[in-house]
Length: 320
Ligand code: BTN
Image 1: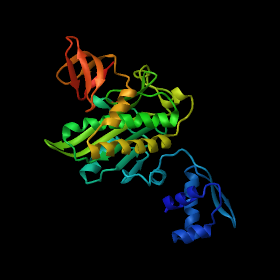
Image 2: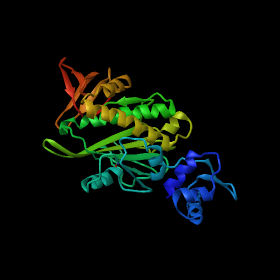
Image 3: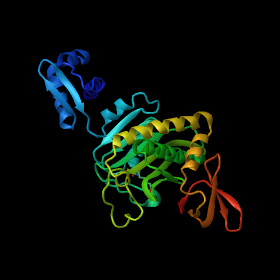
Image 4: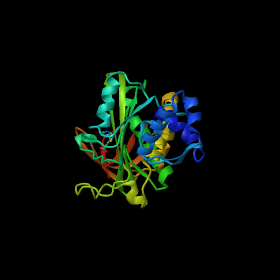
């Protein structure tokens, strides 16, 4: 009901709608409407209420909530359901649990704060309350397990474009899964999957973004930054999330339906912070020093080794 009331108020922004009209439209009492209006006010929505005129939404807070996102993303082809938590250990861990219980592709999990955020290679990911985005997408694509790395690139491209659209900042992608601004990391992507040898059960794409974080712990302050730090102003987490979903679904369905990664690769190349640089590729078995020369149509990084041989890299930890 709260979502329905909010949706009507948003559609009538800056004009009054009477309690009676709301109660007729939604089939509940005017007292029930009044109660929900008060809940919305407590959440930070500025709603003017004048007797005989009704309610007018004057200002919306920058809050991430299930209702807000479902309204803003109601035309999305991708979104099936949204879970929003104030605090959770890790949205990826929660998403995995949901995926195993049968949650559909397009289920999105968001949390205002993570207490056990996980990064790649077992690292810790810090997600402080109110100033970061911690978001996981559940996917159930009919692709081969070894193609799942492409989902990371699709996500990186979507996040880069979304951040650029909202902030106008110049954003780069450190292949395959870090988003960089002014040489510092603002976003990391952790893709995890449940699969059999030739069949994917689920893919969880976890996206962590430093949005309005003011200070970082000493261990990472030289390498991490936030959108607020570079833009010099607060950035709306809601706008970033909405834009990520919109960009992601374009690139994702394009890949799922055509099998081509063309658009994603084009973005990853154009925004690359890796190409032309000497990179260290750390895989489980070896470490290679090479020059990053290209990203091929499959999204693989092509690197020239010291002996001149060019090899392709599917995924791995790359440091520039
Ligand atoms: C990395 O750069 O190491 C990847 C960081 C991924 C962090 C995100 S935040 C949302 C999701 N939940 C997690 O526990 N991790 C990912």
